[in-house]
Image (cartoon, rainbow over all chains, first blue to last red; front, side):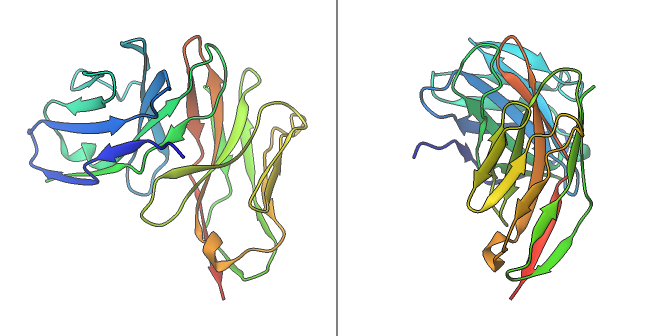
Length: 116
Length: 114
């Protein structure tokens, strides 16, 4: 069964450093998402991406964050200058692509980011 | 905005006990509703879903019915197993022109003892 994959599974970085989290969505899916879960808190929406553009972003997704689909298979989340409060589990998700539908999102296993 | 409220955990049950995890939602439209499960050290897996009022989602012995009149989507299982120990998240889907956005509850930890 196809699945969403994410790398790395864990990343430790120093405050102020740039990090890139990578995701490979399910191959025929058209919508891509990032969510994050700070330890002990809710899973929060960050951004959705369709047709090589951001379709929606939350207020968390400020200028320090960016997303890209560089090569037609990978979907990346970049944090330019990490802060302590960016420490969280980051989940990538994808969905097949019926416009305007409420279809299921399929999640990857997550990347646990620790900012020191 | 839309929101989801789940019962607080942890919920601790003995094997073969009946499980209910309450979930209520607030939404302006008619969202789809989901239960996701997170096993220790793993990501979020879809457990079941319902897309309209009175629909019942079911999977692996778990069930939930979309109740529009009470804005609820409670998760139930008749007989839990130790392997059901996990964190359960209720979520609703806000429809967008392109894709959708999931709004999650806080999650409920379930611990099943043998």
